[in-house]
Length: 296
Image 1 (cartoon, rainbow, N blue to C red):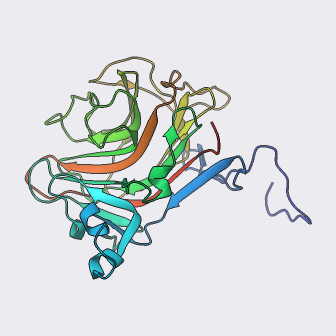
Image 2 (image 1 turned 45 degrees about the vertical axis):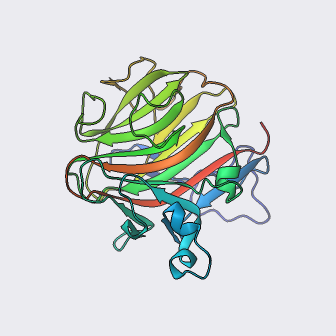
Image 3 (image 1 turned 30 degrees about the vertical axis):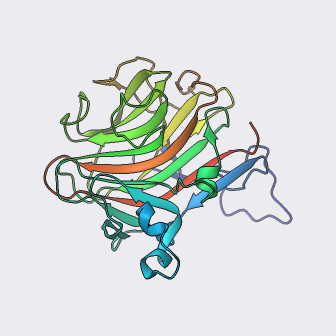
């Protein structure tokens, strides 16, 4: 149905979706969040109207100019990270998070976690809350780095650290990390009660290409994933190294989702980058959005 005019409100029992069709003929869901917000859910969207900075700078008195310019909801941390290394992107939207120049230096974005500082931390993103997570990012250069984005217990990029987690990850090698079977592709990692699963997505990472990542957890605590509007199956094979290749969900088929996540685990949204050698690396983060049921 195209170019159709209506008088009065348009009603839908299951909301609306914005779709485009790729050159391959695959339909892509380009909806960010939900077109019409559901009164049964709460939504938090971060568009980076101000730059995230180090916690110490955010907590300075408001007479300090550095503090006045910083984001009150999101902060930056990581090995050798500084407030100055989080800047507004000049060729894209959002913020550019750059590491310092030593091996294993990091730049990580996360909600301002001080008590009562922001709803981003005060709202619990629990596995029982039908949480949705979305972010868009691009990588300016593919050199020697690890990039991750999703919901975790800690900010660590290692698969084995958190017993419960769901996140997308790209890394160029196994140094200071786990061994993947394919270091050119995006992976999706999920862990349930200490059992890890690594899905190798059929997506080769490209320079300065926007990737819209989405994780949706249903009322059954099972998660499904989307990249640039395409829904992908996830693996049910466990393992903290290697990975199992997965495919896009075919038309008319049901998605393979995760098993039920551990009940009542509160996760934290993170986006991070870690340098894999003695050189600065960067990731351009456009936005981060989360929603959940107003009551579990």
